[in-house]
Length: 238
Image (cartoon, rainbow, N blue to C red; front, side, top):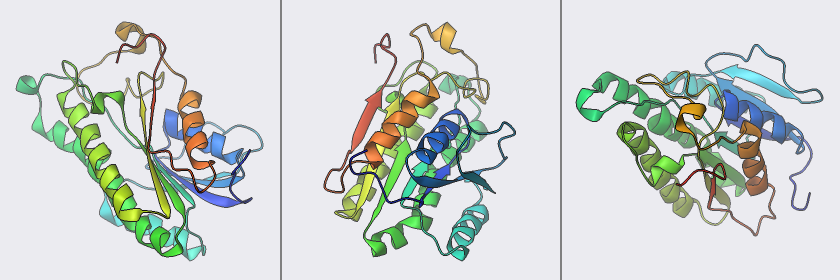
């Protein structure tokens, strides 16, 4: 593929769920050696002929993020691609919601992503090379009933990502990818309220579709920066 990185460049994927797993597998086919950072190792084997390892990391724990950085650096490496997919959902009315659940959503979706970026960005800037990709959501730009807190977390992430992009020009490329409905276990793990892709009724992307968007962004020639990608099921209205 034109513009593909050199063989065995390191990609760090933060969040090992449905999208994160698909991203890890896809990047492993794009000449990256992949490390997945997640609180729990994936118990299912990855696709054949992929080189993927795991570091236990909870992005809500600053100490865990520091240890992740230290472990990567002890190996004498720095990610060429850092992809932050960690996120949790919440589906409840604000006037009925639990502020402690809101805190959890913001801590994972926004602050957790920024903790990781803060750890790795200085050296990426120093090396004058790197890709930082945040998985956002179409709901960052248009909220919906019962989605206020989740939308706020992703809108905040997109604003922070744009600031990071401006602060990191021209050497570190920053991309936000905003999926619509994706068929993963995300909906089962929503911490307040529940819905399924079938109940939403617009169809659903596969995690591999989102992974393809990530691969597209980071394998462009270095002169090309993909700032934002929106990807959604063909039947989704927003």
